[in-house]
Length: 84
Image (cartoon, rainbow, N blue to C red; front, side, top):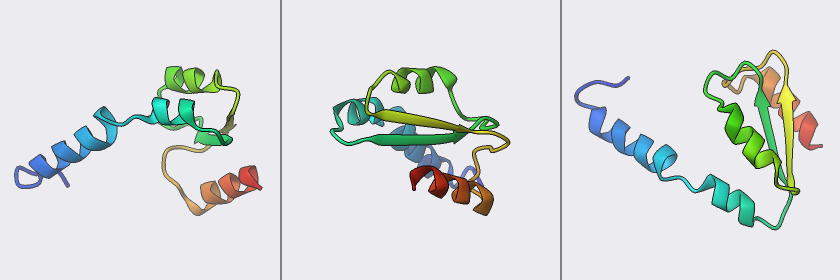
C-alpha cells in the first residue's frame, strides 16, 4: 500500500526500476535469443514498445490470449510451454 509513510520508498522504486531502466539497450546488445511473452489483456503493456523490440532479429515475441499482467499458475504454464 502506498501511504505517506511509504511514498518515498515507492517513488524511488519506480524511479529505479521503470524510469532509469535500460531494457532497450540491454536487449539490443544481447547476443542470445530473447523471448518476450505477454498477455493481450495486460493493462500495463505499451504496444509501441513491443513493436520496437520486435524489430530486433534475436527477439521472439509471443502474445497470449485471455491473459493479463498477473502471473497466475495458468499463465506460468503457458510461458513454460512457449520456452520449451
